[in-house]
Every structure is written in C-alpha cells, then in structure tokens.
Image (cartoon, rainbow, N blue to C red; front, side):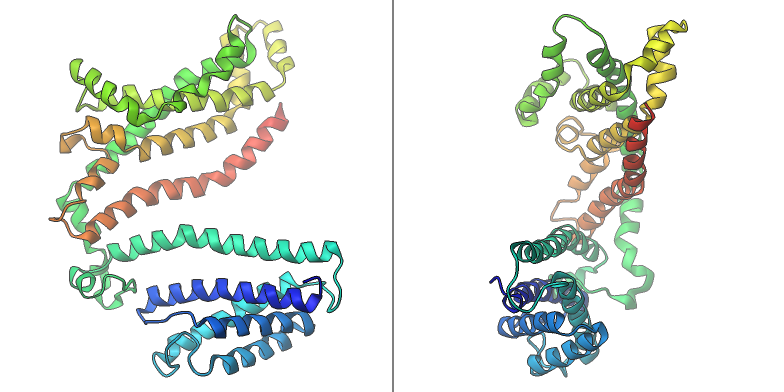
Length: 399
C-alpha cells in the first residue's frame, strides 16, 4: 500500500462507500424513492475518482473528468433504479456524489507522489481519510435520528400508515405540516409543561450554585481536616445508579408528603447536580492565582467579600459552563419526574412526552413532543457553547 496510486485507490474506494451510503439514505428520506447503494459501481467510482484526484493537478479539469467517469460507470442506474425514474432528483444526487467524492479525495491525496511513499506521507494520507470518515460518520449518527424524528412529526396519519419509512416533506400541506405541534399546545397542555420545565431547571441551577460555589471554594482554598478525602470523594454519588435509589426516594417522599409536588423535585434535583458542579468549580478555583485573593484580604475584605468581589467575577466563565450543564441535566431528567409526579398539571416536559407514548395518541404527536423537548436545549447549547469556551480560556488567563 505504500505506493501513491495504491493508497489513492484504496482511500477512494472506502470514501466512496461512505458517501454512497450517506447519500442514498438522504435521497430515500427526502424523496421517498427506493434508492439503494450499488456496491460494485460505488467501488469502481471511488477508485477512479481517487486516481483522478492524484493524477490531475487542475481541480476543475479533475472535477469534469470525475463527473464523466462517474456517469459512465453508473450505466444508467446510479442509485439502483433507472435514471429515467425521477431524473431531476437523481441528477442532483449525481452532482452531489461527484462533488462529495472529488473534493474530499483531492484533499486526502494532496501532496502524495504517484510512486513510493515515505512513512510520513503514508500515515498522513490515512489520517486524512480517518478524519473525514469520522466527521461524516458521527454527523450522520446525530443528524439522521433527529431528521427522522422531525419528519415523522410533520407527517399525517394516513401518510404514516401508507409508508412508515417515507420521510419526505409533504409541501402541499402548507401550514398543515405543523398540525401536530398545534394540537400538542392546544389539546395536550404542552405550553404548561414547557413553563414548568423551564422554572424547575432555572431553580435547580440557582440552588446548585448557591451550595456548590462555597463548597468548591472551601475544598479548593481552605485547609481543614479531611479536605483531601472530600476532594476525591465528591463524585462518589455517581457510582450509585439512580435506579437503585429510586425506591428509597419514592418511599421517603411518600412518607413526608413530598411526592407529586414540584417542591419535591427541587429538593432532589440539586442532590444529583451539586456533586458535578462542585467537581467542576473546584478545579477552576484552584487555577486562579491565590495572590489576588490574598491581596484582597490584606485590603480589608472578609473571606466572603473576597469570594463575592474577586473570585466570582473571575469565575464567570466557569459559572456559565456549570449553569448550562446543570440546566441540561434538570431539563432532560426523566426517571425522578416519572416516579414522583402523577398530576398532569405538574408534569415536566419529559414527563409530558411519555404521556404521548400511547396507542391512543398518533405517533406524529409523540415525535413532535420529542422535538419540542429537544430543540430548546439544543439551541441553548449551540448558542452559548462557543462563548463559554472562549470565556473559560480568557477567565483563566485573566487571573
């Protein structure tokens, strides 16, 4: 394999199989056509496009040659059905196939000679392929289930019964596509569930920070007997599965009248989030220079004053990270909400979604509920993650 042409052919073969699987899934979901990979054709396409990417230095000439070769090799059935069937969709798929083959392969084989490869060149080509494969594979794992969930939520009951595997969009329905979402908010009280989940999650963040900030500071800065043991044992609670604690929690909350109340959730949720918040914050506090806090003490500040005026402002990135993580835990928590809540007027969003898992409720309503539960936290994370990462780095340098 340590020949440029052999490595290019093999990388092209593997990359072609990766792309054709992803592309046929996308085409099947978006068009409803019975497309399928043609393995021998895909292998030949990958080999020839890989060699073209290695041989032809001009990118546009290489793209044109690749397009002609892919068309010639496909023999009129590029996706397992005749090109005449839904020709516009298949032509678009062919163009996407050539682009997705040629340009990534050009990057993967860039700088490789035609003949013998050095060890560095060989390993670099392999790493480039694995990097591209990793991006495609893990992106597909995330996107495909969400796409299926989203498309199912906008389907009508008749369309689901006729073909449950057709995930194309019925554009002719217009605003009727969102009928399932409208019925969830009007008939299934999902607006209330969203509000309750938001309030419970925010309250959990507040209670968690209220206890974890002084606790993490004490473990990181103060000297007391058992400090090392406490620092190492903070996360021991996660060694016990929550399902093991479910029955004792249920019995205890029933005895004290806390079951079927949001106050009960606000008592138990911080128990599951404070340890991880302590663990994350103590590491950040240790990274802050102690000289700044000592200077504050010498200027007459109390220990609480130092925490409030010096440590917390420097720790805002860490507090934001912990807050988002705790919010996500509380928002997505299901087991305790399912076990402790029976009154529909007090359901959190995850508890409300499980109520849709019934033979009496259409499947598209269940998928719409899952989308409603997923999108807000996904948007929150994607919107704040970049700023938190940047702020976390800046906060550590600031000290």
